[in-house]
Length: 305
Image (cartoon, rainbow, N blue to C red; front, side, top):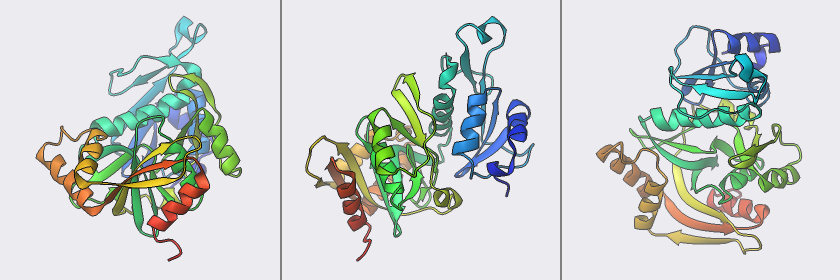
């Protein structure tokens, strides 16, 4: 299978501006079309190791990010997202084309991939032990996820936990980790060799930069994992590292609150979530030191035992 890395810059731009680049991320193939150099730059760097399909092949999602032509091209240039002829979002400033690309890739999955129970949460795995991290924005979820994958944990997802309804396994969707504001410098200091894309200031979420997914996580896109723990992380400056058990009932309700399509799936969603909760121990987790957090996660996964 070919990789993005096999395409030269000129061929990558030709496909994006023409028939589309068929990019595989986990179980999905997206046909991406764009005339914006920032999108080509982001795919060329952050998706360097990702497989691509042959031109004309099947795609689950049609993603078009375009810079409007005419006077708008020169006066407050914008980026527009088009999905099957519809525009679900308002245009954004052109400089935010890359964060918009990542957001619409998440939107496509969370709104269309109902063969999975989809939970807003990161997933990491080590030693055969997958841990789900559901949490609202600002909780420190992505910072913790980034630190873990920089210390040898496999990344299954930063934003969307895909629970396969048939057997309850977690399906990998390893894509760049979205870091915001102070988290960008924290991860730069924590993992100086990690590759981060160019920070984009002024978005609705502040300044955004994306951490490239580890190559091993991308290669293992077809290897699902069994969840053993569900951890609700919360960063609190100066706090002592604390792990507190959550009852099964609380765990069910908290995960349901973070699921995009729990109610849309009806009884199947209930059964899928109940099985996931049965398989896992639940915890509330407060942290302020990444090294202490990683040591605790390693113990949960039985590393070194």
